[in-house]
Every structure is written in C-alpha cells, then in structure tokens.
Length: 344
Image (cartoon, rainbow, N blue to C red; front, side, top):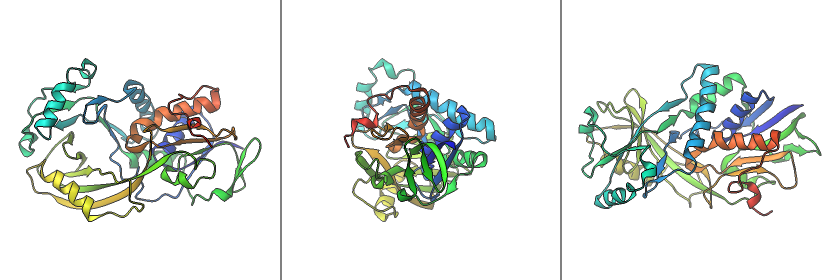
C-alpha cells in the first residue's frame, strides 16, 4: 500500500509530489497530461506586489520561502533550472496610475520589495514608460514545464483520464485500479466541479489566454508589466499575458483576446514582433480568492488542494506543506483556506 495518490499535475499536484519526495513518502500521480492546461501555458510569475493599489501579497515572506525550498529541492535532484529570480519592471499606464502609486508608496511595508527609482538600462529605449516606472526586485519565474519534467523523471506521472467511478473509498484506504493508497489528494483544477466529494466548493473557472512572441533586439532580461506581462523565455522569445474570462466555458483561443494582448504589447514596446503561438486554458479560481485546502468532512483519507488561480507558482508549495502537515502530523489547516469553510 502506498502513502498517497495525487490526482492532477498542475502546480498543486506537482507541489504535493515535491512534498511527498521531501518526506520520503511513496506515491503515484495521475493526470490526463494535456499540453495546454493552465499550469502548462502559465509563465509561472511570482510577484510580491499586486493589484492597482500595489498591495503586498499576504504572507509573502512565508510563501516565497516555501516555494524556494520546494523548487530548489527538485533542481538539486534533477539538475534542471526551475526557479529564476527575475525583477519586475512595472510601468505606470497613465497619470491616474502614477497617482495611485504615489499614494501607495507612502506605505513603508513595500519598501523592501520596490525600487522606486530603477536605474536606466539599454533596453529601456525600446519601451514606452512616459509616466514612470518602479522595479519590483523580489520577483521570480517558475518554469512549469521544467518542474513537471523534473518530477516526471524521478517519479513518472501516469497518464490517465480521471474517472471518479474508478476510485473506491474504503474505511481506511482508497482503491484505484487495484492499487491501494492510505490517502488521496485531489488537485485536478477546475475539473473539481465534477468531483463527487468536493463539487460543493465554490470553484470559479477563469479562462486565460497568452501569446508566445519573438521580439528581436529587445534583449530584455526582466519581467515587464504594463497592460500585460512580458516574460523573457530566451532566444528573443517572450510570453505575453494573460487575460481573464469568467464567462467562457471552453479552452479555445479567441481573436478578441489575442487583439487585447497585442494592443497592450504595441502600447508597451517600440519594436516589431512576430506571434509564434496563442494558447488558452481554464484556471481554477475561488469566489473568495483563497485556495481550498484540507480534508473531506466525512472521509478522513480524502483531501484537496485547489483554487490557486493565477498565483499557483507561489501559493502551491506553501499550501501543499500545510496539507501534508495536516495529514501526517495532525496539524491544523489555516481556517481562511480550510475546505471546511464550504458546507456540504
């Protein structure tokens, strides 16, 4: 009998796998292994300062430390580069945005993360930052594909369509395809809406779209943010995104969102570019904007980590650690994220 069955291999499932590896637990991870899931197409941006009011991410120090420990562990085991420190050059979009920053900058809590007078760089001549800019110095990027490939090389993720009828819950273990597990953790993203044990949680699917573009001569080594994020991927290629759509129920790329991204890119850079790819996927977000973490109220061996939204790269390792502490060390889940907040 193995310790854990992990259902899903997005940031949530992969972080559970990392936690199992660090604890020396036996586990299997199953997933449909689709190319264009929300994690696979994500840039994996870690940003301590978010929103129009420049709010500091709650518990950022603890979240960043947990992420660093988890991703560096897989780097150590595989030799892959997964987490890269990347400052975020944030441009004010308008006079109003500049005023908002001036107001927010009076909050000294942000001073350790923000440089309000970034030094001029050669690549600045290619961008339009007429209203000024700041540099978020504690940003980072997590390469989701390298993370997946690293874990897959250590413990191969099994390709399997998630059929909930194939999972049998016994009194003290779970049974899947004749294999027994002490615990099962569901990390299947927005598909949790079909999960018979957790369909009561307030999941809010959000479709996001992004582009892969080639921008010769830009030579920008940091993340740029204005209307959209522009993330360096190397070899003159950049990720541009992303969008939000809480109405769409399909994951097909759309011309409307492509034009939205292109308009934002054109207003940011003064160089010609070529679109090499356009991708879309559906993220699992929560209506109260907090993850769903914890144990089913009626089944002590059935658990969930979901609802990470656009911040999976940052949130997943911390909450996976919290969940494993609950399962194997009988420690409490933070009530703000505990799945028990949703009534059956």
